Image 1: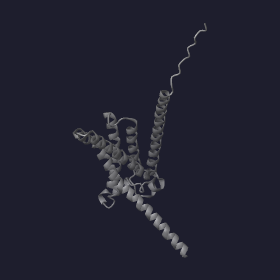
Image 2: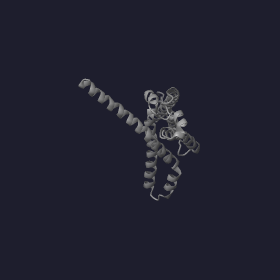
Image 3: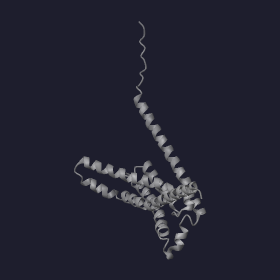
Image 4: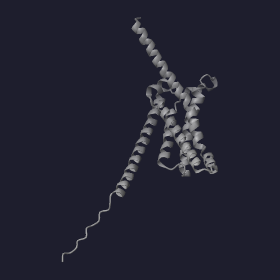
Length: 222
């Protein structure tokens, strides 16, 4: 082999190894983000009890705003990292949870509920968002723990083979495309809703800013 061929092979090996290491790290770290998402979402009653004990109004506002920002930021970061489940080559070639795209779709649905309804004030909206989050976490936890991380356990060999994307690439791709279609539909709905809300708000602003035109009063000539 020529020196150029050797350097090219080493570069490709480093790039492919680094990509596989990054994917494996993301997939292994997403359960931590899912856990934090559930804890922050279900910890709302504790935060409200703490707010009632705050004697200082400024402290209560800072505590509540910090909780809201951290909770929603973790949810968005979890969905952003879950986008790895919508890459066909990675889904079919790597050992990923086969229901990972469905968990990401449930996460986006929970985010859509938060954006469209007042989850912190509406108990029904809070329950819907909680149901989506619990369903998404279950769809991720079970294959990740009992299939991907338990591949060395012989008594879980059947479960690991059934819920690993690289073992059934055709099924994994079907699930991925269906979930991606759901993500696209939810994204379009969120965009249209945001566009209509912004249009209504801008129309109200323009109506308030426009001065009322008074009709001129004609005085008859004497």
